[in-house]
Image (tube, rainbow, N blue to C red):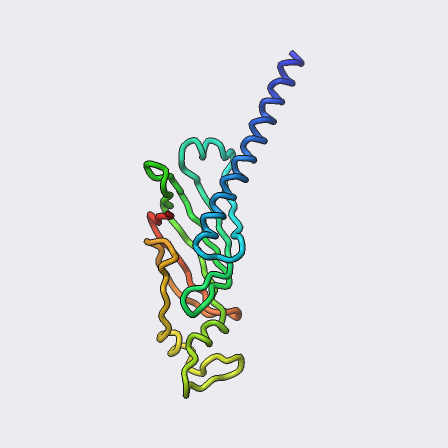
Length: 175
């Protein structure tokens, strides 16, 4: 009876270790993929849900949290990107992933926005921010081609650190 208990405990411990090794490996693969979008520093990725191996076997991850920084989008730089994707599933053939839902924020600093908006004759105030900030924000355009399709900017707010873009999406495909 004692031997059977030891065997059961050893098997459970082995499954727990295998589960954690698999989580770490998949988080690393996701981080490398996100870094391939042009983020200079390695993004942080956390896969939620325990145990992980059943999620992996089913081809569907319940929730993945991604934090990255430093992506240049045209004339501005994303200081911080915090995104949570839900219901990530592998596509047929395993060449891509699709998230059922995405939510998150992207912070763009004032310095980058001021540099992008700098034009001769425009009045500037402290920190190089144009006096008519809402007007200059309306005039800035930049490419979001590095971001996945179906991700959209839901709203924009101004914080003490910069302009925060509130992101959302449904059926967002990741290469």
